[in-house]
Length: 198
Image 1: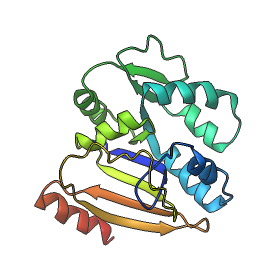
Image 2: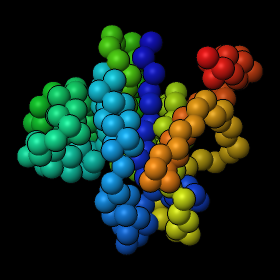
Image 3: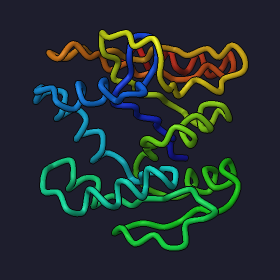
Image 4: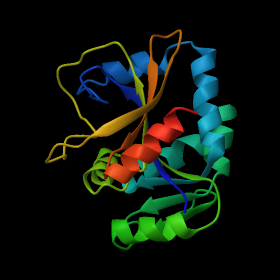
């Protein structure tokens, strides 16, 4: 079974990923940190499938095919699944539409062969993955900035949810890549601890 990885490239100390004025996003994406960029690109290349909501898909489908850089190569080449009941066509290369129940569609994807299933952007979609417990792992690039307001992937969490920190890596930019796995049971917690010690 393939894992679902929720990867969020810009997260503030207070867990927001987008401020209303988008100044945080501009700051993050204007940073010059080749090591951090290589890490991100490598994670994209490990993916067997990218999954996303309709709005994110439409924005990416308009932007990435016209770009020429390592990130664009990864984004354009990897199979993509857009979760939408209203999108009529998915014309970006290597794309298809999932119109059914999110949990059921994710279960089907997990049974398919290939690399990791990586979720990118679209807050309604990523929030639903967290709320429904469908993300097997979170990879959060946390920056030493507090926003005080904005949008968080955890906004729809309704009860105490525990995560185990699997690994942590700091970059020159000040960002820390935190890899976490949800603790769903005592068995999951034990397995996660074993994996973290390798």
